[in-house]
Amino acid sequence: MSSVYTFHVDMTVQVLAETEEQARGLLDQQGGYLSERNVELLHTTEIAG
Image (cartoon, rainbow, N blue to C red; front, side, top):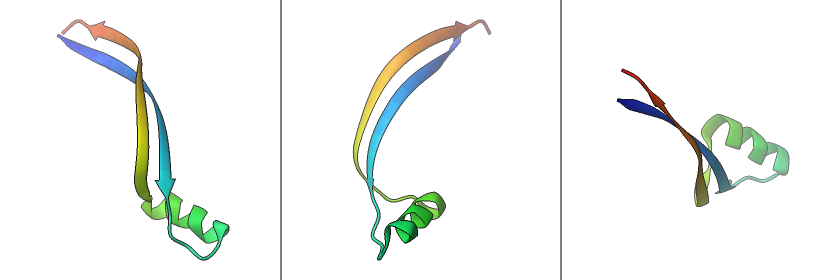
């Protein structure tokens, strides 16, 4: 039997750039350095297989 897990994830990401606009673009295109992540399980639903 499989289950669907729903998580709430808060992340702090750092991006090296010269401007905020450039940093936002780089974050969208390439991501950044993940410096912190907090995960909370919100809900689990079992799926009959």
